[in-house]
Length: 111
Figure 1 (cartoon, rainbow, N blue to C red):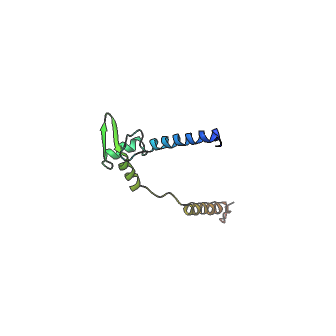
Figure 2: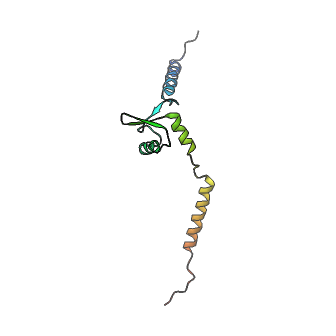
Figure 3: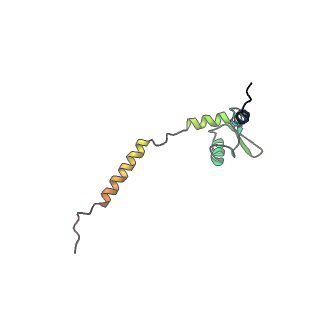
């Protein structure tokens, strides 16, 4: 039997550890999220709960929301980002404006 390369053994062991760490770090749907760890930001998180847009609870000064409720709110309120076509149109409009501004005036000036 041929001995295995120690680097391959180390890489396999590290891969198993990294997979376990990644699974532990992934958010769970039943996990509670407080305002400090919210993807909405602290103030927006608290405001949405206060306004009743997200169901949450206040415990010991922390405003807690279930991860699944937070994800559902974000999904429902997502807005599309400007597409490349819109960016190109804006660049063309700005270029045309700059060109027009650089043309000499046809108005007669008084001496």
